[in-house]
Image 1: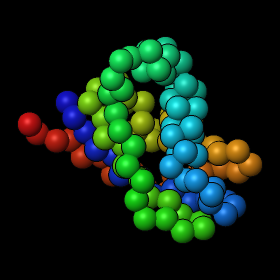
Image 2: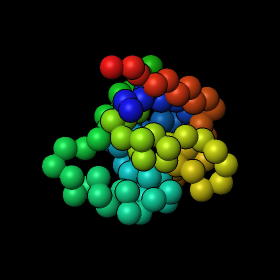
Image 3: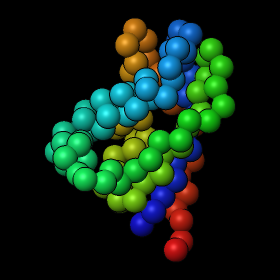
Image 4: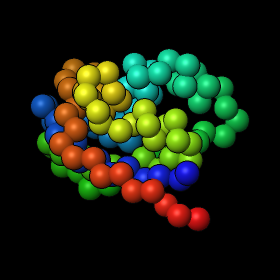
Length: 108
């Protein structure tokens, strides 16, 4: 089922100069930690089953959405303790801490 997850992330250091690229890389890194097989399948897929949408940001906070078309992607993104994608996604020199995640299923 299509889902949208909205995140507010706090940075321990100033944000990256190109936040969309950092978000994309961090998302794949976190997804690989949760499910290497799912991450590899997505990398090999002709069409990726998700989209990342960057929202408002400043030096210490980034908001973004993950629009998912696969339940497996949505499940991997839900914050549920150690080892989940949103537990502590990292970018280069400092951690991104998920402050808030609001899932919303879309009815078609």
